[in-house]
Image (cartoon, rainbow, N blue to C red; front, side):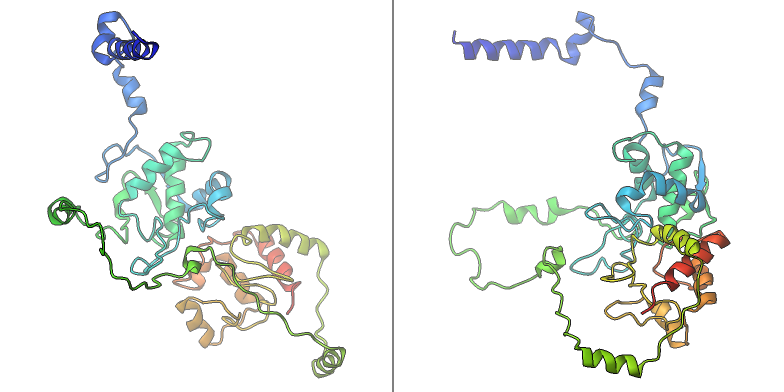
Length: 345
């Protein structure tokens, strides 16, 4: 018998004696205890079966999310780089490039809880408590405008939340309706029309770099004319320490907004010169309907308006796309407004 045949025979024999049918006979292992099975049986069904007792709200969830999830998913569940976005995408499922998130696509909230409890955080899966998981799920729901920040998500209130796409899935009936189309003889020639059409731009796939138009050169003469035409704007002196504190607070905003030289629109508009400017005026940014409605009514981002918005965005502007829960401390509001004001147009 060749070495190959001998090796194959040994592998087959080992497979037979190591199978479950031979385990008890050969004294290998033992049956798992009920409590051992229960420790690993953490799946949660759409009807709530398996949902643990616990509770959490978005206020607590924001802090836990920042510590456990934001490194990949962003402070506001908006996603970083190629990590998934968990918020946004409302009313995009009928587009060629839909944004599928917990709020726009997932039909069952139990899927979010099950996955987060079982698989997150990345690299440290299974370390979240039930209450922490409820709080994180609540924050994700809040980021999708599905609950208020003080809504307590628990095993008792779980199904009070209506998922927008709960009725968006259909029964997979392809075996009955389509398989017959694939069971005939394969076509080997002239199977497709020769006409070729472009159906999607690479930019939709986020692989086409954006072209930046070259800025026209500004001559000294033009600069002097502009300087003479526009009087200098006096900026009130601000405590440098307060601005420095505001820079630290702005870290909560950097996932969506840029400010200063070279700033570009991201998921939120550039904030350079925002203090004192009319709302909805940043070039190239598509604002939400609620913001544009307030802009048409004359909203100006003065100190009072900025503080009110940043303290409670969803109360100040119903339907805002900004998922930030708000700054709760007056000193943070003082600092962030001072920092923003330090970047005039």
